[in-house]
Image (cartoon, rainbow, N blue to C red; front, side, top):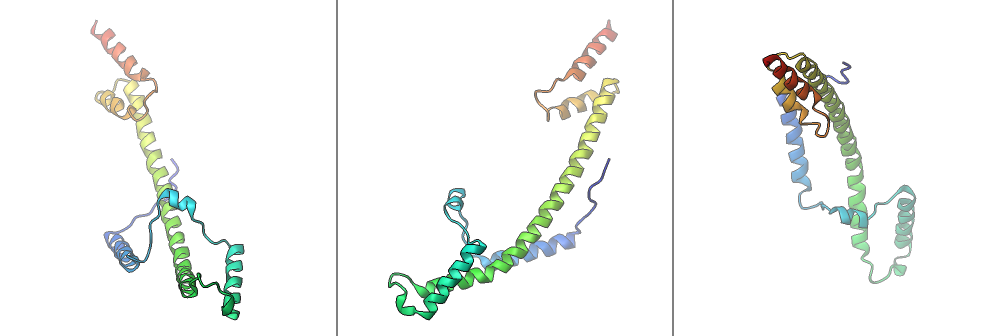
Length: 165
């Protein structure tokens, strides 16, 4: 078996992580929004090209305030722009942390699943050899794979009944 990753987190590590997350959650509470899946489709985000265009628009609004339409709240525009500029670096760091944790979780999941499959295959094999106590384990574990033939169980049942005769 190929172990892809070997790592662990102490209870102190987890305590620090959870404390940091609580601090972040408390700090952003009331300042951030959670969109629904539909709303996420409805609203976009600024890409590099559009962001540069918006910066140009802002420069023109600064240079020629008399051309800003009366229905546009320039103070709110500036406030939104600043808030976005403030959170983008934080978002990038958090995305990096998320990706690292997610990648680590994927490797750990693969290691765990591969080990579980190895155990399952071993149980299947020794169940076919009628090792006592393995048929029930195999039957229970094989329920993870419905629709697959339980020929091993049928084979065990038929060999048990032929021994009884």
